[in-house]
Structures are given as C-alpha cells and as structure tokens.
Picture 1 (cartoon, rainbow, N blue to C red):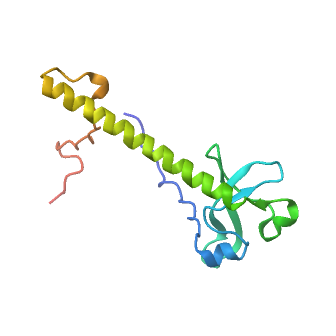
Picture 2 (cartoon, one colour; picture 1 turned 90 degrees about the vertical axis):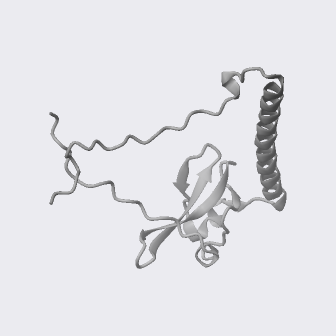
Amino acid sequence: MAPKKKGGSKKKEPAYETSSDVLGQFGLKLHEIVRTPLGLQVTVIGVKYENPTTKAGGQVWVRYSTGHEAPLEGGSNAAALGFRRCTEADHIRRDVLAQEVELQKLEEKRRVVEEVLKLKQQGLPIPEHLLPPPKADKPKKKEDGKGAKKK
C-alpha cells in the first residue's frame, strides 16, 4: 500500500478586491479595457494585496485576451508608463461581441431541441451527437468500516 501524503491543501491565494473605491485609487474600474504600451488590450479584474488584512502593497491585476492573469506594472502611475484606457467604443464592441456569442449558443441549443423534437415526432431514434453528455457521478464511499463512525 502506498504511503499517505502528509500536509494540508494548498494555501488559497487572496481574492481580488473589486470595489470601486479600491480600484478608484488606481484610476481604474472593474472590467475596464486598458491598452498596454505594446498595444495589447487587457481587462481589469481587481486588486490583489500582499497582506489582505492591512491592505498594504496592492497591485492591479488584469486578464489578457489569452486568459492569462498578471499584475499591471506601474500601479498608480501606470498612465505615465504608457497604459491607456480604451475608448467607450472598445467597451461597447466587447459587450456586443459577448452578447452575440451568447445568442449563438442559445440559437445552437434551440436548433438541437427542434431537431430532437422533429425526430421524436417521426418516431426515429435520436443520434448520439444530439444527446447531452452524461453527467459524471461522484464515487460513493465504501461502507466496509473505513470512514465509518466508531462507537
């Protein structure tokens, strides 16, 4: 039998502060699009503190279009380093694109449901690709005495 691993779970990293007061100190808002000096567009996701209890050493964190998250260099003087807030048109374009993607997903679901209903009315079997994926069941604990309460 393999030896049990000792130690607890990983220490959770502090969550992002997303209040407008905290982000206002850096001149930013939540989900705001910022253009980096290299021309990349990033989205503000919050402020992470080195010490969350004392709120010291805060850094703005952003999400790149690839999904990677990283701290925004420069902090409160980011504008001096070349970080610029994108125009309202960029913000509107992002929101419209997100809405279009959501509509496409809903339209695809509607199309699948219509096709399944049509096949059901005709009495034909439903193809595998139209069925939803099976849900993974959690493994049940064995009741062979392990983990059971001792009296």
